[in-house]
Amino acid sequence: MPGVLYAGGVVAALFASTLTSQAYAQPPFDTVPPDKIVITVATVNGSGCPAGTAAIAVSPDNTAFTVTYSEYLAQVGKGAKPTDFRKNCQLSLVTHVPQGFSYAIASVDYRGFAHLEKGASATQKASYYFQGQSQTSSNTHDFAGSYDDNWQVTDTADIATVVWSPCGELRNFNINTELRANAGTSNTKETTSFIAMDSTDGDVSTTYHFAWKECPPDKK
Image (cartoon, rainbow, N blue to C red; front, side, top):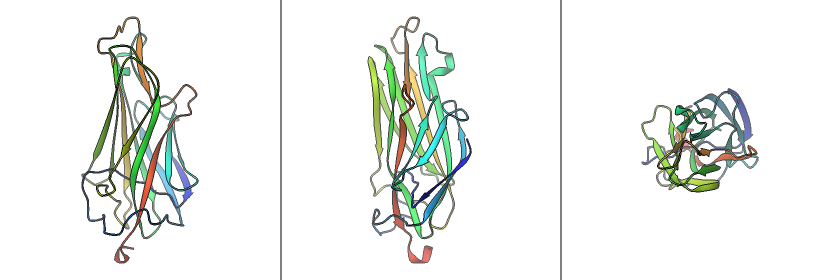
């Protein structure tokens, strides 16, 4: 699902566990760059996001972007294929940042719907990293049956531990997500359990919240 999204002063970002040389002393969140940012969708791959089923949009207030899925569902039990228990999606984004700024993710909100029979369970997992950097952060959330409702989870990064994009360099930002449905002790011959990163009306999306930093003068 290649495409290009335009917006004024938006940010892209990344979780990580350690500081890097880009995490300078200047505090973040001071300002949002006035110039527009361009996010190019390099690749969208995975069993949870077949071609044409994932859409990305930048928020008007330049503080977030959202990813909406229409076929992201993992299931087990009656009517499910053996491979349906796990679905994944990898997004690779090229973010053109206004000169003199660095970006990082502050938090991510995931939403969806799940129906889990008694004895079944489900897992939502996500990881984030910049191309060429070894730091990767993973976050996992578990759900237990019986359950039949919308779900929402948030991954939050301490601002002191995020990794900022290198100043003056263009690096792909990679987002890997995964859904798993586990049958456990549920009756798989008569029931179906599933977890979806969407809803019955397709109006549930994942939101990535951004943070900005100005680069040191000698890095601009």
